[in-house]
Image (cartoon, rainbow, N blue to C red):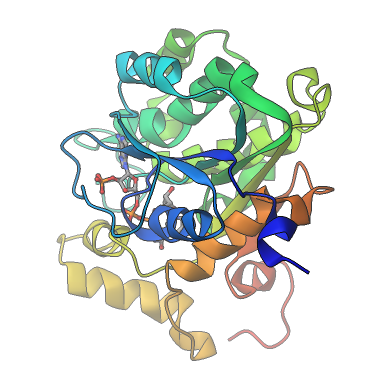
Length: 292
Ligand SMILES: NC(=O)c1ccc[n+]([C@@H]2O[C@H](COP(=O)([O-])OP(=O)(O)OC[C@H]3O[C@@H](n4cnc5c(N)ncnc54)[C@H](OP(=O)(O)O)[C@@H]3O)[C@@H](O)[C@H]2O)c1
């Protein structure tokens, strides 16, 4: 059996956001090795700008800017077989209750609104039986408890309406990282049978990673500590999520490679799923007689 054929990416156009680092880069590298024509979205003036594997084209965009989203949508090629949303930023406020002084609006724009808006703009560029795979987070685990708020936001008609809703709900978006990821889980769950996807058998799924050793790790450390001390914050994170199971931070490949599988022909009967790739930590929030 030809493994590359099994994935179905050979000579197919794929789009990867956040492709220049972390999980997105791991996914883009594997896609390139599987023979895909990789269109890699790079943040203009972002932290990263180089790839050491072949791709088809770099597309520059700040996904927090509506104008860039529109330009990007125009530049994206037709006949996309798979789209991977791997971009995201952390919330720069310690704890989850302070809106003032935080980048909460930016987090909502980058982590959520960009993805939802871009999908609506490029849906006709995605092939029948294509796929959309989104990286959310195990931080969005409690989305069902917040489903009403997620729905209210996503039901707003336009990008501007959604932005206005966020601005009118500072209490809800004070924990913008968590809320944006909850909304992504809601979106995927609610929309698998949306005619815009199901009529053309376009699959939509999300991957919810646990703690992963990427560029965001240091941001998570800084923003978890009340004093902004990265080492202290990382220690707090490890105390809660890593040490109890004598565990370890995942590598970017441990997220990027499964994401590539999800978007491939191998998973052609999977849609509307929110996959938690966290070594089962989120299961322990449901039931675990062995947790400490
Ligand atoms: N690492 C974790 O523990 C963890 C856990 C759960 C979920 N996640 C999620 O996993 C996804 C991938 O993150 P990662 O961990 O691989 O971290 P990462 O290496 O920092 O990757 C995030 C990527 O998003 C890009 N990006 C951020 N803001 C952007 C913008 N405005 N426009 C365009 N691109 C932008 C970044 O570009 P620049 O670096 O150039 O700015 C970077 O390439 C994110 O959605 C994150 O929330 C991460």
